[in-house]
Image (cartoon, rainbow, N blue to C red; front, side, top):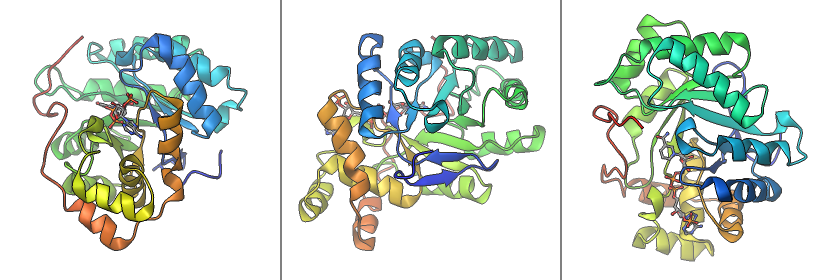
Length: 278
Ligand SMILES: NC(=O)c1ccc[n+]([C@@H]2O[C@H](COP(=O)([O-])OP(=O)(O)OC[C@H]3O[C@@H](n4cnc5c(N)ncnc54)[C@H](OP(=O)(O)O)[C@@H]3O)[C@@H](O)[C@H]2O)c1
């Protein structure tokens, strides 16, 4: 496990690097290059999903990196069209085949889809996968507090992580507090607000003071709050710039000023109503 990136320890003792590389909207044709570059630069954590259509290329980059498998933390996620217990088990097998890996470090339910189908049977399939040893940890994505309560009441394993949209315009402190109270690590998706937060004047001022870029300031804010984060970028220069956020240190007043930018503004769907199935 790499020693440079700060880590969180999950509720089953597995260690996760706090900074990773995101691959949503990374076309398969680009995925080997960008993931290989990220691993060369020093990232040791990659976030993909069945829905992204790039598991093959992500897996290829990890396998061809020359790094020991145990040094790279790989996450994938159950697609929204895999709605039953059996679907979930079979699609996990396909993910491992596509990735060309014997195990993943983390497997997540991508969306709860509460208006479409009960997520409890899907979670029971993830529990089965976890017990088989082929996922070192299991968790959820886009779960609200009431969804987590149901899982904790009706199933045996508490999710190791909850991956939700978080950035300075949607700081999600209530949900983060609930996760923390139950030993669930929060992961921040779209940490840069898909670019929307990069032009914010408060962030620009803090960036100028630190001689850093806006993206670096935002990534560092996430890391200092204790969340796990995986910005996506297309060019080697940006992938490296984002990784170098780890060299920055924000003062308490910087942290407070960024958190105060909260507007409750989502770039993506609301988990209670999201019903999209590919
Ligand atoms: N679980 C979920 O439901 C869910 C949903 C969304 C995302 N995610 C995960 O979270 C990851 C990150 O979220 P995201 O990809 O939606 O958005 P993001 O990381 O917040 O933002 C990516 C955007 O920011 C730009 N960017 C990156 N670094 C930059 C820099 N240093 N300077 C200027 N612009 C920069 C990228 O441009 P270029 O690409 O042109 O460089 C891209 O347009 C995803 O890749 C995925 O792994 C999960």
